[in-house]
Amino acid sequence: MKRTSFLLPLAAGLGAALVALVGCSNAGGFCAAAGECDDELVALQGLDRVGSSDDSIEVCVADQVGYLRALRANEEPECAEMAAAWDAYMGCVATVFAQEGVDEACDALSSPLLVDNHPCDSELDDYFDAQRDADNGQDCSQSEE
Image (cartoon, rainbow, N blue to C red):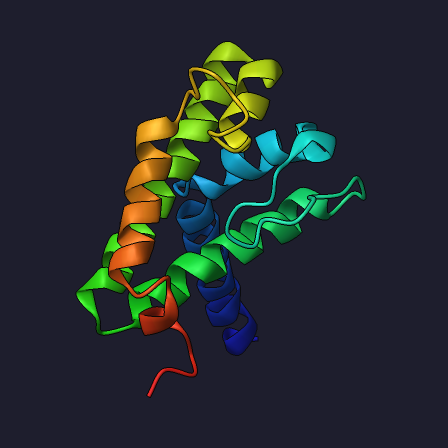
């Protein structure tokens, strides 16, 4: 019985830490916006259509958090810059979605070439600049030698 009482608080603590980690991420708001704008998305950095199943947003969040973790795990500073820039872009999209609504969020998720006055243009430019600095992301890939 003592093991059960020890494991229960441990499991609760780990679960709370996971919720805090994902809750503090910009990925949740970003993926919620992407889910609302699914038909209008122009694919950016591997962001496929989010879908409409019950777990679509959660899968998107896991994908985005995994992408950031992979970038941050690389030793090259350009990869950390890519992660910071992508996270800032996701934060911009999430903020636009929360404050201005679906239409503006869909604009933020679209290609700046297709939208006048793109709401997250500078954040997306920063990401593309960081990606170019990392040899179009190749410096941050798993297969890099």
